Length: 165
Image (cartoon, rainbow, N blue to C red; front, side, top):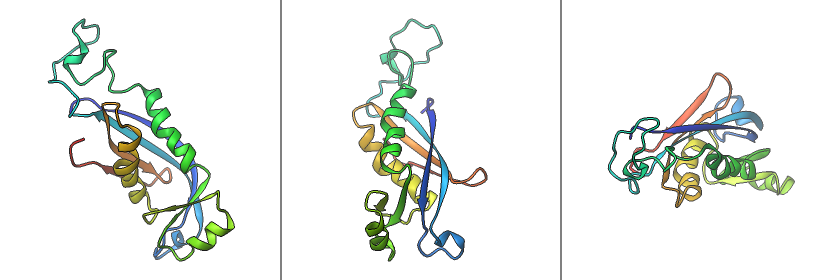
């Protein structure tokens, strides 16, 4: 696919990496920057026809919408960034198999989010691409190709879908 768009969103979130051999095994948090890369869903795209800025041809002949976009950036914000705000921002992520999960949940039932994965940046990115993206972008004709999670300014993890949309 020739076209992709990316938008990032910043959240503050706590976690603990169960089984980590160092300080990440402790309760801590990050100011995450999460980059969402979206592409046209190949199942809904018509055959590609090369178009140029100002071309008057009908955009329905290619992977872009009638305005010439993969998806409007405000739609990425409304569907993916706001999901982060509602579900992970200023929350504490804990793996359902972490022995501390029941205690943390009891201490703060509204601020602790029990997740089905050990909350590493890699697993968080995969969950966003494989679970959140398909649900939130359903019906848009767009597919979440990749999520890149900057855990710090120096460290990030990226997960990209290997299959078709």
